Length: 283
Image (cartoon, rainbow, N blue to C red; front, side, top):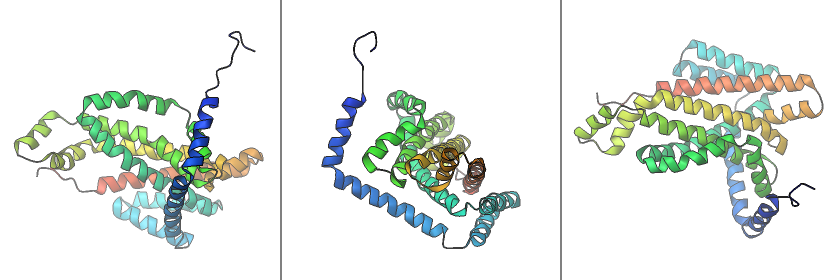
């Protein structure tokens, strides 16, 4: 018993809310779960169409076209490492989960970041929310997701998306605010609509900071995907969890190094893809 005489338990107030949601919106959540599973299954099916050596060759060729031979060698080394560690299937599951989560996070965060950059009051309203979201430990996001969607890949994906939105949103806003005003005024003087100014002037100039945001989104998504192994999401996170719970340092080390390899690959490929995109400017 504490000195105050009572115990504050937020869970006693929150749990009935989730119970009510599960009771009254079970069908809605089931549809969302089926849709997420369908998207994840489709991405994983595409990744498994080719044998391991075939996919490695395709990714290496894509890296060579997008970047250079160094990135192609990196693709071969990182994917080859995952294959050699006998974690190919788990690596593909993690890659599929991260690809879908990062795509969803960017799709949510980018337009919100553009909107906040245009309106200072909106940015001011977003700032404390983003501060809280980036301060809360990542595994906290798994709790409500699991309470609604049970165990599996769906709560892992939803928690990953929620965790990946804040850095991308914040850095999108920062990137656009850092664009010199004279470039925006030049576009306005030429009579270009706001959408044209955004896509042809502001975004090319903001690309370096946007790349940082994408990098942070990828790395944070990988971090929570590892934690998602605790809720049955599978992939490399499950292998890390197995190594931890069974005190098998070998599998834990192999899975951890494979996660590093996947992070390096996704980071370099995403940077190469964005650097390859045409620079659309006034010229």
